[in-house]
Image (cartoon, rainbow, N blue to C red; front, side, top):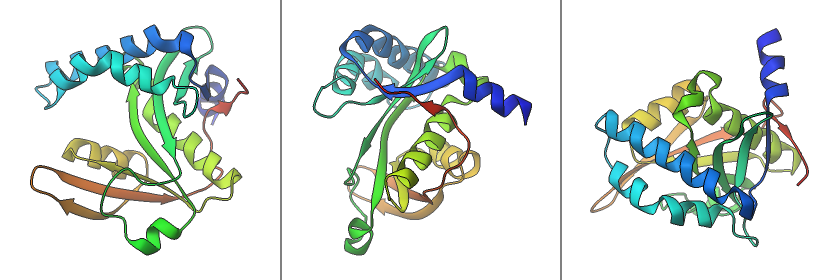
Length: 185
């Protein structure tokens, strides 16, 4: 329990700002290098689009959220939306109050702190605090599916096949679980 409390003191989540652009680009590039070292697909796309992905996170009208270490700065980011970006959610599911967690990227150097799980915990708390019933997300890789299901407690709702992509749709009930604090920007 003491380790969990320490994690809460070390990290916070806040809206991304324009001055985060270089730090976010570096996080995405580090993740791309990690993917390349492990022979994972899409690392080249991540590397080539890192500046564009980072710029999307700092847009003023729909900012991303950064996970920030108290001393070391930005170690991850994610996007939240009120509507799904992934195809395959039913009409009834789309009508339920949910937050959709998209494009979560973390610096692999911080892996022992589980920054992706910290961002997911924050999203679950934020959803509960704003009257949302669910946090939903999608992924295309089997490794991410296992991590979101086994490491973060999301349930696989269904897998959707299209001509070029297999997308796994996952959901978890919103709840005020432990995770990083939210700081006002």
